[in-house]
Image 1 (cartoon, protein in one colour):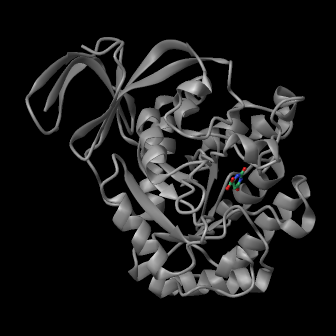
Image 2 (cartoon, rainbow, N blue to C red):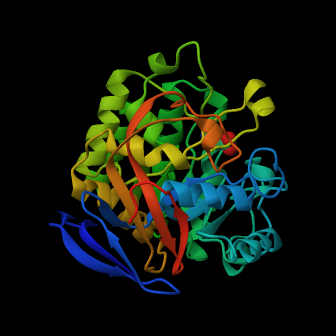
Length: 380
Ligand code: DOR
């Protein structure tokens, strides 16, 4: 057990007054001064690419979960676009078996279509029995509307939600590709009353408006946004690393995303942690490292504390029906630091925040009763 003194605790209604609180851990009892610090339940990342199996130069289960721990994520959801693709039950169970000994909790997503190619639906029930908690072709959106509708129905019959990437490949990468993907997914949900639909990484005002209208009409849809789409616009990376899917958009889109997160149209923040080896990135691979910069980036938005709790702690667990866990992170909200990807635990050093100053950083992560990350400064 660790007893933190003078710490403020993040909960559903916001931050507590400074208090003493015990966090269960193995081993000898410890006392820590938490003055000025925030103790939060471990954060959940509904959207991560751990690249395992298949891309060890970009990430492995070990490096990805170490990176998650450093970023304060005690539960991460691994997407299926590995090599081979997680489109068969044995591939999902093998990942979960290997993940069991990792420092943070890993949940697995199974592919919705074989090879993510958008044509042949996978064995939803078999994937669910193997331990998949959702189905998704994330990284791609090659399927047509009827296939998505049948996939949503099959997933629902196996008790699983479908996570939709929503950038229709047939439409390219601009804002209309997202509008088309989101419209198609919402239409599918209307046809499958028992379906559970979660829209990934919304990036445009148009998509936000579609989700707002669907929620107002009572459709059971949920949505996420990434830290980079909340904090950056296309202009912020001009001349730099612009490759990410969906792309960074306009200031108006970014403002709409922040508003929608605060008013609840967007349920959660998920990083879309997308590590790439330097060579892959130089060749144009899409995506950004997400785990280790998330706290500082999200804190820079100055969200109401109750919104933060919903967005990174509570709502993701509800959406994916994950069991409760007693994992905790200690955050120093005042730590000023400059992002240096060379210091990442992740093998993916591709960060649009490299060289930027952030405020707020995780100093300790406790997961499964063990201290799995600890920075020397500011502890004790
Ligand atoms: O930027 C992205 N990278 N977006 C995705 O949806 C996939 C991801 C990846 O796998 O690299």
